[in-house]
Image (cartoon, rainbow, N blue to C red; front, side):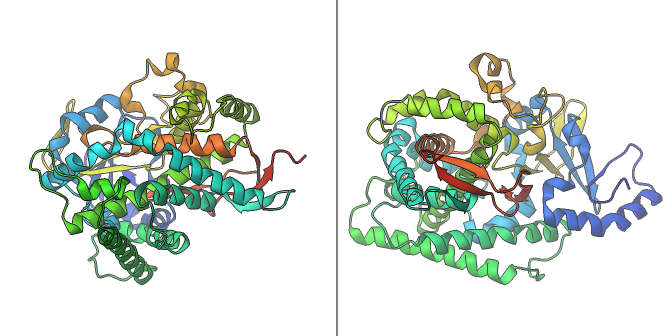
Length: 465
């Protein structure tokens, strides 16, 4: 069944009547796949060819899987790109027009304004708060059964990274409830696959779908909570020196204009929701993968134990976790938290002798790029030594995109990596993580790359044998 469940690859000579009929017959199976996980709808060619063009209901999408073409797309031709319609339909109701979703001059102004907040010296200043949040998780787990407690590690890491968000972005505010906020994020993301599918079907925004009302309520709740958080900070009379304080004080270096009220809500919600979600997923996948590789886990524990100092007391010590960093980079190769970069051609795009006309979609399938047969030896094997300096030096920068590339590269990547290092260095020496199920959870596209059904593991204090 060449079309069932996956996008149809365009062939030379156009679409025959027979192909059009087969495409129509396969539509229900394809929609079911898209709703389950969009990455499962990609044709297998994206894992072994440099450029793949597909068609869905007459709409063409070019998947770019060659590093040179990706650089051309994301850097050289960045000015000819616009945001993809279906992703905006999925994200804008919650995130508004913030740094993740805006385009053009509005995006550039926000990016310029926010960039100084994520300088390396700022990130290092947040390490003590990250360490305290990780230590709180350690104490909470130590209070469990000495024989170990089964926990959903993805949910646990969401809680831990949310504690980091509270400490680094909105410190001193204990009125933002962790669990309801996390549930609202989960509820909102849970129905985005319907928004994506309906948008690709060119259905109007008002078309109902499962989870739509709950998603709308979640978006209203999230935006309301963030707005009230900003109001409470302003009522204190001093902005503070955390990320919210920096946002309140930030000014565009070109225009000297501060962020407006709506932009403050859009961007703080983006940093809070996207920041804790993606970091938590990297940590959860890491703990699950390390359980399959005890020798690699042992090296990570030895490196953390060898620091000889608490990162809360010596933030610079985190930079010595070089092997742990390699592990994280390899986890993000196999399970990139943002598995798909989507754009629409605002003008004709060229890749060698191939032209993508204005108006068509152009995507970088990061999940497939990181497992591409032409770019990686044994691409499905977990091997942190791929990112040892001597091996990484010869790799094309655009073969590995866990944080995107070009002008829109993730503004918080340094913060996210540092947070992961601190949390792993705190938790791994203290606990063993034993999978409840032998098989790895399926990776599911929900804007981010989530483990289907969570990651259940028994968390056992290491002093218990």
